[in-house]
Length: 310
Image 1 (cartoon, rainbow, N blue to C red):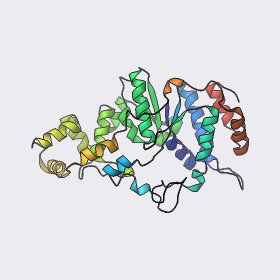
Image 2 (image 1 turned 90 degrees about the horizontal axis):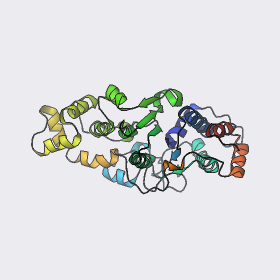
Image 3 (image 1 turned 45 degrees about the horizontal axis):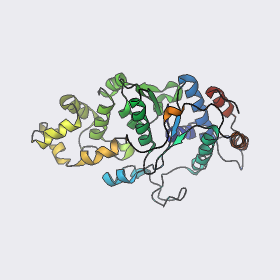
Image 4 (image 1 turned 120 degrees about the horizontal axis):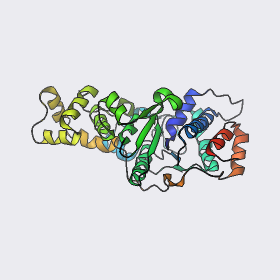
C-alpha cells in the first residue's frame, strides 16, 4: 500500500474539526491521518506500507516544460521551512505546523516515509509501483489525485483507492473497468494520454486548446495513443476539420507536457515496499512523547491495526 501522504493529510485537515486547546499545536490533520491509516490497514491488510512524500511539490523540470504548472498554488506572501518567497506551496499555517509532527510520528512508529529531492510523491509512487510490479507484487495506491490513475494495470495488480469522493471508507477502487466506464479509456497508460490531450486546470495544464475530454477519448479510440496521433500529424495526415488544425497549431505542446503529466518510474529512491509493515515501534520513547504532547488518542488503535503495541 502506497500512501499519497499529503493528499491524505490535506483531506484530514479540511475534514476533521480541530479540537486543540489554547496554546496547543493544532492536531486535526495528524489525528485524521492516523485514523485514515488505521482504517486502511484494518480494511486492506497490506503486506507493505509506505508513506510517499513530496520532497518538491513543483519540480523544476515540470515548471521549465510548462511554466503554468501549479502556478496558481504558489504562495506569494510567506516562506515555509526556508523555501524562498514565491516558491512555497500555499498552505494554511495551522496545517504547516502539523507537518513536522506527522514526520516525527511516522518515524517513531516505524512507517517508512520516502521522498526524493526534486520530485513529487507521485513520482515516488510511480517508481515503487514499477519496482513492485516487476517483482510480481500487487499494489494499492491511496490518493485523492486522479493523476495516479495512469498507474492502473489489471495485469500487474495495480489499483488506486480514490478518496476524493467517498473518502477512505467509500472511495472508488479504480481498475481498468472503472477507467473504461467513467473515462472511456481501457487502461492507465491511455488515461495518461487522455490527460495529455485534455489538460488539467487543477494543475495548471492547459491541454490542447479546443480539445476536451470527449474529443480526446474519440481521438484515442481512433488512433490508439497520443504517439500514434502525433505520428499522423507529423506525416501530414491529421484528423479532419477543426480538431486537426488545433493539433497542428499546438506545436510541441504534447512533447513538452509529456514529462509533466507522466509520473517518473525510475528515480533512485532508497527503500521499497519489501520491508512489510512495522513489527515493533521504532522509537517507543519518542512515540510516547508525541502521543502525550499532542493528545494523539488514536495512535493505540493504529498500533493495534498494525499488530504492534506501544
